[in-house]
Length: 231
Image (cartoon, rainbow, N blue to C red; front, side, top):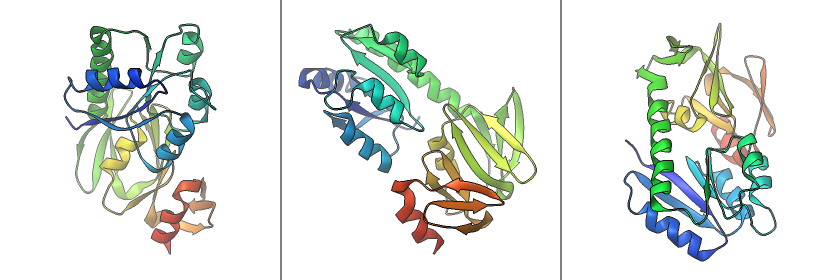
């Protein structure tokens, strides 16, 4: 099992230290960064992929709930809050779990176990692959997808749509996991929600790209890399 990458967004130092102590006791987890405000975290996420965010709600400038609403393709989010009145709204925003402070190590481990299980099931969504094709789970069937037929991949929260020349597959998998599987210079991440096949590009500007008549936006923080790769 590869490491699960997470960040912490929390403005109370003791709460950050508790998470660090708890996290040090579990394997295959890595804290990539900690932030005391959501704005710095937004910038970090525009440049980096993470699997999980541990998020306080009471934050300066931009609170945790409003922060979630800014995310186009959020990773798993675990709320860590001393207040339970935000729980209903948080779960409506598809928050994975809600840790009510002060939470015990036992409660923390329960969350970790659920997340580990989630990512283990992700692995099973693509069960076989080589340089020419992959098998993708859709409605309990294994669907063969030829790599050369893929036009683009679009993230839809916990699902992705794989758009091919003559078909479309929807599977429960994060777009970052798909990006890892489709490495090798054939595909290009152009937006937090889109990966395109470079060979299928017919035209582009600095703001959008056309692949087989599909118009795909280019994210602001991806523009430089995209234009360098396509020039």
